[in-house]
Length: 154
Image 1 (cartoon, one colour):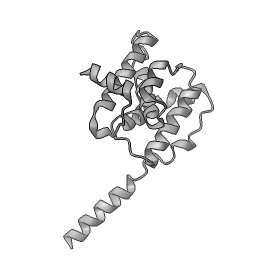
Image 2 (tube, helix red, strand yellow; image 1 turned 30 degrees about the vertical axis):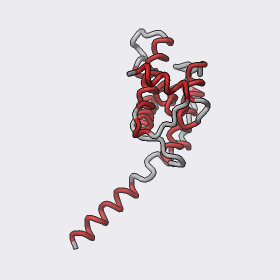
Image 3 (cartoon, rainbow, N blue to C red; image 1 turned 180 degrees about the vertical axis):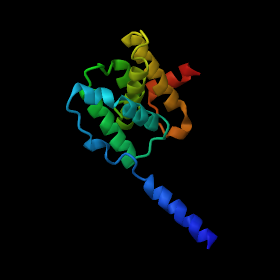
Image 4 (cartoon, one colour; image 1 turned 90 degrees about the vertical axis):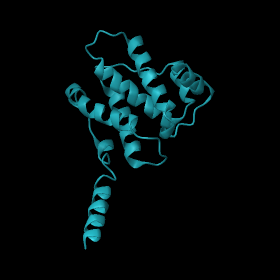
């Protein structure tokens, strides 16, 4: 009986956490305040992406990335650009771009009042991204440029 109860608890917990971010794509941003008020949520979603390995077709991950993109496109408080460095490091891989977006969002919000320049924040985000990529458990398929950046990190 105990085993069945424990199995039930485990199955219930795994189902409850199976799609934590299923409603994120439905988030609506109507005003500047909507973007500002969601910064804590952006940080949470960014941390989720940066602390979990890349798994193809993971719905939570896809929803999290869609939410970040929507927030990035409309926030009036931050400007995001995708430079050549990021393009060459990701090789256009959408999963890697999502990781970079998480790193850049997290860094931008954390550095909001730090006095750091945009370039310093971008360098910090790239370092977070490369650190993520260097962790073999994150399932990153590194291209030549990313391998070089990982090697330089060490």
